[in-house]
Length: 165
View 1 (tube, rainbow, N blue to C red):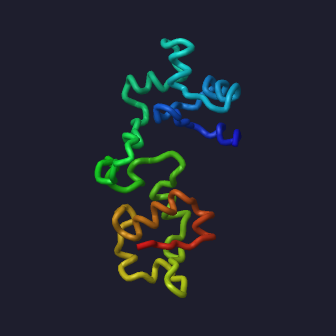
View 2 (cartoon, rainbow, N blue to C red; view 1 turned 45 degrees about the vertical axis):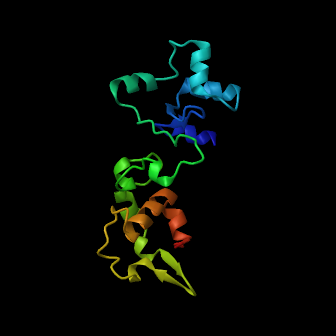
View 3 (cartoon, rainbow, N blue to C red; view 1 turned 60 degrees about the vertical axis):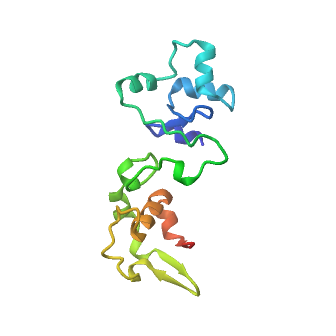
């Protein structure tokens, strides 16, 4: 998977703080030395003033990705207590996720199959499909478009969608 490091910008998740660290030469060298690297610990152990990359400067200027915790880690935490982002996935410009325009041009959502009991149905044959907004995360078209953005056009061509109730 080293070939993926040539794509930029790249970020890697710190396994202990759950914050995104820009993948630069210093981080790559640390990963070459050992397979598990907690970047926050590496910084504090080596030299607290030393930065792994421009990430800290970006944070100070307000230009870094917003760090979002994955929850408090308690077993009792319910879905109601988690602060989920609102709106369509497309407005967040997540790295590795196709944009709305890319989904519209590269993925044939109208002919993506929906698995129904006993048959496969084209999405375009669903009642109201054409009127649905691709950026509405509560509509079936919006949900399917976000799924396509995550999977990519090749998977969309070779798969069908199953919706569990």
